[in-house]
Amino acid sequence: MNWIVSPERFDTPEATALRRDYYGEVAGRYWERLATDQEIDDGLADDGVELLTPPTGRFLVGRADGVAAGCVGVRVVDADTAELTRVYVRPAFRGGGGAGLLMDAAEAAARDFGVARIRLDTRNDLVEARALYARHGFLEVPAFNNGPYAEHWFAKEL
Image (cartoon, rainbow, N blue to C red; front, side):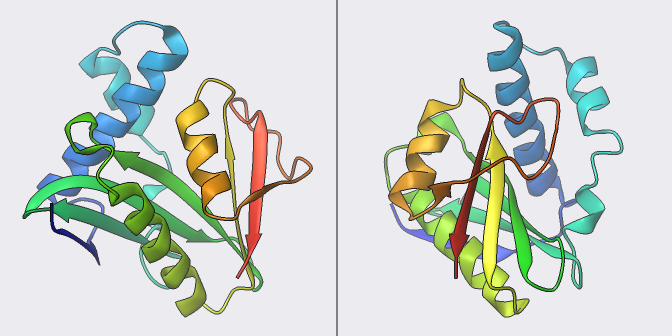
């Protein structure tokens, strides 16, 4: 598959569909059942996604052979730090290298913002995500927030 990753507004139809799929999967895994449409709507309401636009961030969409297949967000936290969020590849596109390309594009976006490090938090059950972050040079660090779903914290110097 030929992947292309590029910035896109978070509210385009394809970006919105990716965000819904992302939230549906992470919520469903947490609850150990499928998330309903209403639960997805509630989870996406006021989730801060508007910060994923310059100058405070960027939303990136990965397309595999022209099909929206994954996404990632980068949010500037302060002059030195950006945060990675909404890392997602649709199941049909996993295993083809797209997640790595999304990670590379997110790091490049963070560098474009002039930050020195990128960080993220994640949950225990998202083992594939934790493995992806480790493969891309992220190291576990002490907790930097107390989010209700934050159980592991990672950072990488750029």
